Structures are given as C-alpha cells and as structure tokens.
Picture 1 (tube, rainbow, N blue to C red):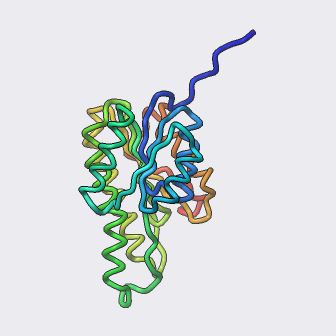
Picture 2 (picture 1 turned 120 degrees about the vertical axis):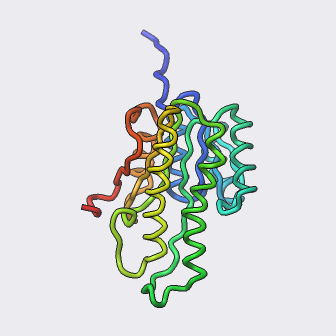
Picture 3 (picture 1 turned 45 degrees about the vertical axis):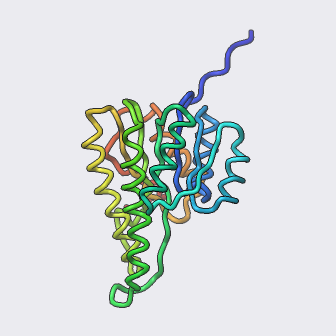
Length: 224
C-alpha cells in the first residue's frame, strides 16, 4: 500500500541560524532542512554561507551580518522573516573563543570582543527576532560547558557563556506567556556537530513543547 510520507518535526517552519557557516551551524541547518524547515544561515563569510546554503538546497537562504551590529542583525532577521513569511526557530550560535590567558594578563580588547559577539550578539538576535515570533516558537542559544563550570585562562569565554544563561532565563520568563520557549545548549569542544544538531532539533521542535528556561548539556558528562 502506498502512503504519504510522514511530515518532518519542523514541517512548514522557518528558522534562522547565526554562526551559520560554522560546523555546528551547518549541521543544525542540515538537521532542520531534513525535518521540513526552511533555513536562513546568517554569518560573516559570504562564500562559506553561500556554499552552505547551496548544499542545503532550495529550502535555504543566507545573509551576511555582524551579530554585534544592531542594524545588520535587524536587517538579516527581517529579511529572513519576509522571505519565509514567518519565523519559528531562532538559533543564536555565533561565537569566538578569544585567547588563553590568566585574568591579570588577559587582553582587554579581546575580552570586549568575546563579550560583544556572544552576549551582545545573542541579545540583538533575540531582540530583533521577537517581533516575528508567535506561540510555539523556539529560541536556542548555544552556550558552553563553561557556562556551567569554568577553567583557568578562559575568563572572557566563560563569563560570556555564563551571561548567556542569564539572558536565556530572563527571556524564558518574559516569553512564556506568549507560548515561546527559550533554552541554552552547553556543549563540550569535542561534541560532534551532528550530536549538537540533534539536541538543537529537539529544542526547536514540538518534541520539547514543555521545555523552557533550561540548559541542556551536550557535553559527554564534562559538567558533572
């Protein structure tokens, strides 16, 4: 007997992914498209974004935006929402590692840059996405295992990732009455992109309909 294909977990949904040209961004894009979503990859490197979108096929678009620049973020988000006619999933994934140095020696300009990309970047992506989101929408912010713990030499990165948990918890409280969910994913450096993408898919889809304000650790137990 013939039958219709089952609909994907994100059938008819539209998503944006910042850090879209990176390994986790692209793996997440693949997972989302495979489950029926349309995806806009947002990042800094036009050639890599274009290649990623081409690999994902007709369901994907791309846009260049510096996540620390409010005007660029607003334009990219609005452009995606307009192209898709809706916006259901926001994956705030752009990030930089900074350098390894003790606090006493940590370069101030690098500290500021790491904070800007992670914290201001996620804030701006969420701020400019919220007007387009409706009940059932999901925001996922990539944190890190050091958003829960830390290690010597990574003060900027760890501080930024801790800050994202505060942003996430506040957003989750503000958007719960609207039926919008907000969660973070702390991950270890050795997590495979595909493993992270499966967790992203869970948080993006209705499979996690009663999950908000949480940190889902995809870290192989590193934060235990």
